[in-house]
Image 1 (cartoon, rainbow, N blue to C red):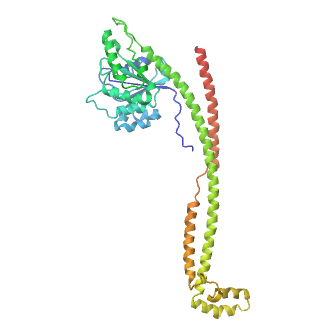
Image 2: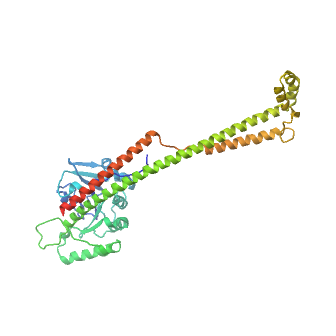
Length: 409
């Protein structure tokens, strides 16, 4: 009724991982949830999007099932016919870390050269960026960390989602020499510096999956990635509570606007109806006058005049009122139009055209706008009551959230 499009608050944080192929995106997801749900390897294993979520039963969803599971993915299919066959969902029963609060989006490995994707991968990633809370960018120091497709994608994302982006050099343990790692870090930093808006706050920690056989300790910010995810969870809770308030306020405002519009339409309809009836009565008057003029013109013809004089007048001799009326219809009765012979024909033309004009104006004026029925008004009142109850629940949720923060502190 209100013509509003509002998405329900998501219960989980959405984290998308992007980067060149073999950057360790799938491996990180497997490590975070403590289960191997994503295929890993040097080859380009991920050619599509995989949504990894928690559930009560281990399962895999493909294509349309994934679109049905995530209602915000409706617009993703516009980026290529082959995208439906390359979208999957992996449902895991893992309880590790904060996985129950997180949905991961594993994106296709980005490469340059002759590699062809069945859909526009860059535009697809940009589209999904509107629906995620955190974007982890992994750069593989051994592979194509500086591939043009990766840099172009990051540049597009940075235009509208700079605050969501976090950058990491993955697989740092594969470059054991410190000066080699520094050289790769400098190369990646220099390439990104000219493409991102917030380069002054840019950082590129090194990460790798835990291992005990390292000859030389290498800085590992893997827990920092987990901290970024935890921070996104906290911010999303706040964002959802704020969005809930804003959506409720928007609905209440729209309900009030709908009522005002309904009242205005009823007034306009009443005015249009009054004008329409006035024009209809005026049209009837014109038709009556047109009929009267036609009668006068008919009586002015010789056969009718002769019949009236010969038969009608003698028959009405004892009825003066009707006799005077008939005499008034005769040519010499003084009831002529414009003072000319057959002037009534001109008058009939004017009256007929006037009648058509009145009918046209009436059709334009007498138009009614749709208004609410009593059932619609009752439904609208129900919406408003429900939304106000939701706002009250939202206040309680905010208090509970603050209480948790206070207890944690």
